Length: 419
Image (cartoon, rainbow, N blue to C red; front, side, top):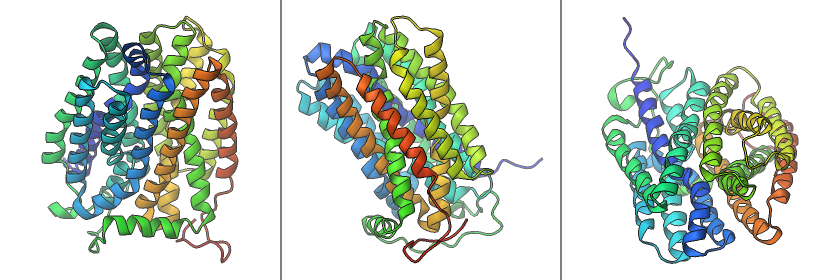
C-alpha cells in the first residue's frame, strides 16, 4: 500500500493553523455591539480598530511571504499565532478606545497578517506540483471553517458570559495550535529528503535575499504591469465587499432590523459552511478553467447579490435571506484560488510575493470600507448606501478581471510568461 505523502500532513497542519488564526477574524462582527454598549464608543470608532487590523493584515502579507523564504514557514507562523494570542488575550484589560486599536488593531493585525493567505500560497508552491489549485482552495477554506466554528461559540459566550470570554477563547485557540506548527510543519520537502507532491526531482533553492528588499523589489517590478493593477484593484474590491463590509457589519446591520445577534452570527457562520464548498470547488476549477473567466463570474454575481441585500433584512430569518446566505457563501473567497493561479502564471517564481501585495490591496479595501460603512451607519442610521456601493464596485471588478492578459502583448507589459 502506497504511503501518504508528507505534503498532505503539512497541508493538514497548515489548515489547523489557519483555522486557529481565523478565530479572531470572526470576532469583529460579534463584538461591535457589546463594545458599543460596554464603553459607549461609537460604531465608527470601533470600526477604526477593525480597519487598522484589516490594513495590517494585508500590508504584512508580502513581507511575510519573503520572511517565510528567509526564516521558514514554521518560525513565522508560530510567532504569528503568539501575536494573535497576546493581542486577543490583553483586550480583556482595556479601558480606552486607543487600547482597542493597539491590541485588536495592531498586534492581532500583525499576527494574522503574518499568516494570511500568502501562507497557503507559499506552502502550495513548495509542497505541491500536482493538486496545487485544489489544496489552495482547501487551505483558503480554513478561514471559513474557523468562522463556522468560532462565530456561534463567540456569539453565545458574548451573550451569556460577556465579550471578555470571547477574547480569551480566541487567545486559547491560537495558543493551542502553536505546538502543532512547531513540531509537525516543515518548510520544504527537500529539508526532509523528499520532493514536492507530483515533482520528479528536488528543487534547488537559491539563497534568500533580504525579506524587505525582496518584497519591495517584487512590488516595483510587478507594479510596472497593467495586469498587476487589474488584479490588485479587483482584489481590493473583493476585500471591501467581504471582510470589510459583510464580515464586519452584517451582524450589527441585521441587529438594526430586530434580528438577535446570535441568529445573525449563525447566518454568518452558514456563509462559512458554503464558503468551504465554494472555495474548494473554485480551487478544483482553477486547475481546469481560465482563472480570468472565474473571476468575472464570481465578482459579477457577488455584485448583483449585494444590490438586493438591503431588501432582505428582517427581524426573522426569511427564505430570501437564506438564499442570499447560501449564494454569498459559495462566492465569499472563491476568488482566491484563481487569483493565486494568475499571480503564479504571470509572475512565475515571484508569484507568492506578488500575491502578498495583491492580498495587501484586498485588506486595504476591506479596511477603508469597514470604517466608511461604520461612519455611514452613524450618520444615516442604516447601511443601505454601503451595500449598494459595494455591489456596483463588484461589477467594476468583474470588468477589470476580463481585461487581464497572461501573455506579454506589447513592450509596455513587463513581467514573466505564460498563458
